[in-house]
Each structure stands twice: as structure tokens, then as C-alpha cells.
Amino acid sequence: MTNTITITISVKNVYGRETIYPACKQSAFFAALAGTKTLTDDALRLIRAAGYDVVVEAPAFRFAA
Image (cartoon, rainbow, N blue to C red; front, side, top):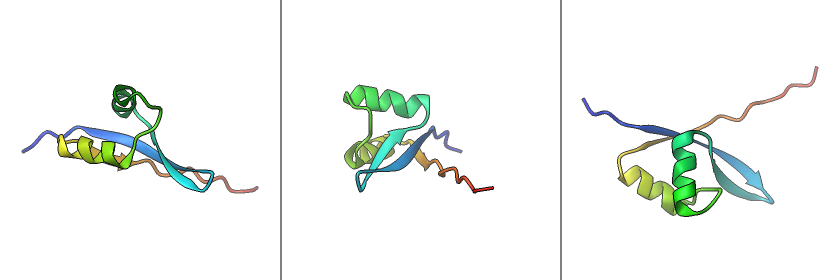
């Protein structure tokens, strides 16, 4: 059995472009290590290659009452 560390990210649409934001301490660490507030596709590829699982946080929907 392999112990895998999971990180969580969130994807937001900013000015028509999908931007990946850290959503947990470990993903925030990787963004800080890269010197950015967001994570790139290349950074996520390297994180996955290092053996981390990446989970995308589901958006919260607000329904009008």
C-alpha cells in the first residue's frame, strides 16, 4: 500500500482565463516555493510527478431564495 499525499486546489475563472489557486496548506507551500500566488499547469505536472495526488475543490453554489 502506497502512502500518497493529497493537495487541494481550486480553479477560478479570472478575466476569461482559468486560474489555479491553492486551497490547502501544502498547495500554498508549492505556490510559495514557485514564488507565485497561483499554480501553473507545469507546476501541477511536477507536483504529480513527485507523487502527490491533486484534488480540485468543487465550487459552492448559491441558490436564490
